[in-house]
Length: 190
Ligand SMILES: Nc1nc2c(ncn2[C@@H]2O[C@H](COP(=O)(O)OP(=O)(O)OP(=O)(O)O)[C@@H](O)[C@H]2O)c(=O)[nH]1
Ligand SMILES: [Mg+2]
Image (cartoon, rainbow, N blue to C red; front, side, top):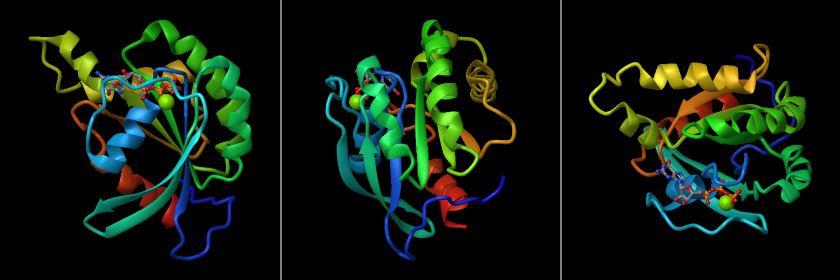
């Protein structure tokens, strides 16, 4: 993984994180979970983008971020570009439990995200892992995170030479979220 940083950031200043992805993917749920540690089940679609400050914590301390949570509905997607170019990292969220929308998510990823990810790191979040896991029921699910990563990487046709990481996560259970801070440190801060 390279460490390119296209957007200059003053030392110690917050990183700019942009959340994008299709409507209903779980962007707002993730931002709220990262900020408050809580899962909100009855969120309304985001129509006006939200800007907020969050503090992420890990064993290395605090990582301050200014986040932009964008709306994913079709009519709102043209707005993404304006924010993507100013970000230090992109969080692209996909509902990993809804394969009927993988094609649509791939088309938007290829059109709107790929042009940025040779220079801006991107964390692809395979969200709603709790729902995928529940479908496995009695079957062994130890390999499911790895399988999900592969499925989503292929579904989005992520270019091998791009600056990305894939994270399997659930906003409901919190699965995967402790890795976010470390990934951001590795991808943006180093
Ligand atoms: N079970 C489960 N539900 C989730 C998860 N993440 C989000 N949801 C639910 O999915 C629905 C959509 O989540 P949002 O966060 O509003 O989706 P969004 O991507 O912000 O959607 P837009 O604002 O329209 O772009 C909500 O009912 C959430 O509670 C998850 O990991 N697991
Ligand atoms: Mg939202």
